[in-house]
Length: 382
Ligand code: SF4
Ligand code: SF4
Image 1: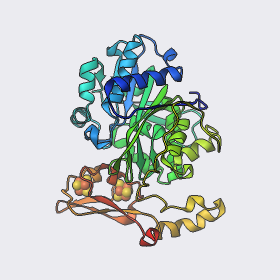
Image 2: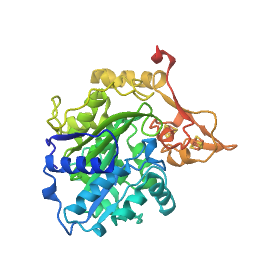
Image 3: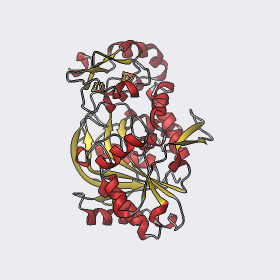
């Protein structure tokens, strides 16, 4: 992976298929990625399929972008049977869960039209992560572990825990199903979680990462935010450079994104500096609305020697917490994804025991009807 690679950008005002095909082709050409693609390779395309949502709900990568990537690979001589579309969304990773997600998100239609395979193998393989900073090995979903090339196609969204759901975070979906909450449990500190994600990014090492920023999500992403029209497709060989460009576009402070601070720590990104941009310029847009969890943890802005002292105070008084609002139907999806096992279903309603909560906001992310809210200290709203 060339971590210093430029970022390509193409303006795209809608998901018109012909224009999307052209934009994706231009990005591959601009970034000189066509030379990597050869007939006979096993290629896995990894979109963001977080949950069972329709494309217009802007939670998942739009099928027009995924279709354009696949058509481009086929135009370069790749046999459709050698292309697999795979992701491990939030929640269970099995046939029943994935078939529903493929249909709702439009991926089934893409596969039927192009002749590629939708992953239906829910096993995983261990992969070592040499030179890792935190995590020295990962179980990866089989189509990612066995691929000659991985192409990541993320969605431009804010994220309640990591600030940004971009290129690096998209790879969390290469870890199978309910193993993901274990990683939240092992790395409850945001900075450590970011370091683990960078270790994972180095292990998966996608050949190219594209970002669907035509219609994005702001506010309480990655699943409960609002749609924001941005009109842009981006791509890079470096997920770190791509995410830096996304922060600039969104008006997001890089210091609040743990994957970027971890990439800087590892020397994968210079501390400061402009990203080299090819293609179109970034559009001038109003900054993205931050998630309700943003700015509640300001301890990362304190000098290192003060952090240890203030952390317990910050955690007790200023950190945002999840709460179960009205309308809970007791489906248990939040409890299933809670790494701290601190949610129980009582009388058909979720109940959170706050004393064990590690504030990962997986419950907020996974509630299909958005009834888990985020409560901030009232002082922070002043
Ligand atoms: S809070 Fe949401 S996910 Fe949890 S049980 Fe209620 S409806 Fe289901
Ligand atoms: S209650 Fe929600 S925020 Fe707290 S640990 Fe469980 S999933 Fe994470």
